[in-house]
Structure formats: structure tokens, C-alpha cells
Image (tube, rainbow, N blue to C red; front, side, top):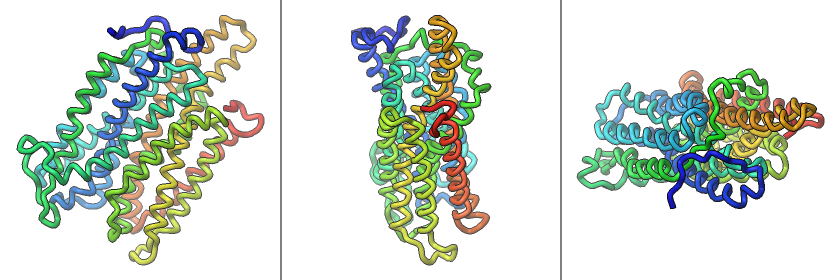
Length: 460
């Protein structure tokens, strides 16, 4: 069957249309989007696990430099998301997904070449870390694209599934890289191994090369299998109105607390664990936390559909603040004595799980808030104005999804960099963790006052 690249008529709220045609098309686009987004997250978070292996292969970087390499992809990805958030209505979701996925070949190939030589300049590693941010940008365009395909009653499920399974890329990279760097996966074509700390061979280049064929296949599948929606086209001015909406900034703050926490802790946890509990050899299992968070995200979206996004988000932030306090209680003293590695890991696993739930519930809130605000304004203005309000609300909601994802992604930079700075300045990560607790308390207050309390301005 030949897939039409552009769909001119799309109305998922029409039940007959949805059952006859819409559901099949929407699910196909969702499936291809999930694959592309999973690979994007894998490339984006590649440095979170690669930095742990660099010292053993002879790279002489300080702990703070390693935290920089783990943090920079998130900084670049978050900044790119601001651009990517507005790209789908301008370019088309199919075109942009295919091209953005193909761009991931640059960092994957570049890393595969650079890590073969321990004398590679640190500045070049910084460039490659920034290029991995291309994977981070893809999330904003992916979510904006998928949000147009599903009816309001299924948005939480669809966006949660897209993002949650896409987030599995974080788990995938932290599972796959420690395995592939220990074997000559590509033979002579992949290059010679490096000598590890104990003399064992390491093929660090596999950390980049292993993704190349998958990226190429996904880019082609997106180009030939996805669709552009003509009804989703919008100019920049129509989308940029979100910058004047107060709820845009409030929801960005909340998403920084959920997705930013998931991404930042995923980027910083392996190196933090190695620095605080060097005697604990569990780095091969650091992928468990990101896996739990990724799988929890669709559940968070589904719970939000059933119980209300604000209610779920509120209690997630309460539990996250308590989880960080537990992490603080389990840390060793600055002289390295005391602490509980088991308690530290358990508290962190809970933090990953909660951040995943919050990712789904907060993202469900965003399009519904914008739709509700526009519908409230047009309530007394007749059917035509109400239909226009729905269109504008969906356009603004999609733009806000992308922009919030950009702001949230900055957590992937600030959290690991905060750990590095806190350790460099005070000797431990305690100060950074205390700041995170204060931040979660602010998220609790915002969620309760604006969305969760009785008679809230926009209950959702």
C-alpha cells in the first residue's frame, strides 16, 4: 500500500472518521515516531555512560570535566528543542522527523572515530558532546507532531506512550554500551581496541558505531511511512503567542521538575554513584532506573487521563522531595566514611520511577490547559468562535508541548553540572541535592494553586 505523504483532512474528534481511518494512521505514525525517538534519546544520553569508561581507556580528564561531558548534550538538546518545537507546523512532521533522525549519524560516527585515540583533544570531545544534543532536540518535534493525530480523550495515552517508550533510549544506551565496548563487534572494520585499566581490550568506538545502521533505517522508515498533516500547518506567529501565556511558563517550570529530573538524574547518576561509592561495582546495572522511569511515563499519562493530571503531578512532587531527602540521608560523609550504598540506590530508583510518572501526568496537562483557556474565552461567542477556539487551543498546546520539553531538558544539564560543581566547591553533592528539594517544593505550590485545588483557575 502506498502511503500518502500529506493528509489534507484530519478530524480525530469525529468518532466515525477515527474508527474508519484515523486510528490506523495515527498508530502508524506513533509507532515510527517511537522508534525514531528511542534512537534519539540513546544518542543524546550516550555520554552519560561513555564518560565512566574513558579513564580506564587512558583519557586523562578530571571528574569535573567528565561531568561537563555528561551535561553538555542536555544543554545543546534543550536549546535545539526551542527551535524544533516550532518546526513541525512549518516543515511537516514526516519531513522533519526523517531529517532530524538522519542528523544523528554525525555524533554517532564522530564519537566512533574520536574515542579510538586517548590523545584526542578534550575540546573535540566537547564538540561531539554538543552534537549529541541533536538527539535531544528531536523530542520537541516528535511530541508536537503526534499531539495532532489523537483525539483529546487519547492524548494522555498517546503522548505518554510516545515519550515513555522514547525515553527507553536512555535505558537502552546504558544497557548496550557497557556490553558492546567489551567485544570486537565490527571486526577490523570497526578499528583496533584500546587497552583498559587492567590490560583488557576495550572497543569504545562501538559506543557510537552500534547506532549507525539503526539510525539510517529509522530515517528511511520515517520518510516513507509517516505523514504530514495539512491541518497542523501554522506560521511562527500563531505559535509564538504562547510566550504571552502565563500558563506556558508555569507548565514549563513543572515539566522542568519532572522530565528535567528524569533526564538530569539519568545523566548524572552513573558518575555520581562511582564517585560516592567507588567500591560498589553496580555500574552495569545503572540502566534499571531509567528503564523504570521510561516505563512509568505511559502509566503517568494513563493515570492523568483517569484521575486528573494536576492531582497526579501534585503527589508526584511530594514524593520526589521525600526521595531526594532519602538520597541525602544515605550519602557518605565527605571523608568517605558511613553512608548506605543500598539505600542510596533504592532512593534513586524511586526518584526515577516518580519522575517518569510525573513526565506523563504533566505532559497530559499541557494541551488540555491551553484548550480549556481558549474554550473558556469563547464560551459565550457562538459555535464558530468555539470551533476557532479549539483550533487555536490545539495549535498553542502543540507549540507549548515542544517549548516545555525544551525548558524541561535543561534539567539534563543543570543536575549533573550541579553535582560536579557541588563536589568541586564543597567536597560532596549535598548542597546540590538540598537545592533540588527546595525546587520540588516550589513545584508543589504551583501545581496546587493553579491546577489542583478546589476552584483552581484551570483545573485539569
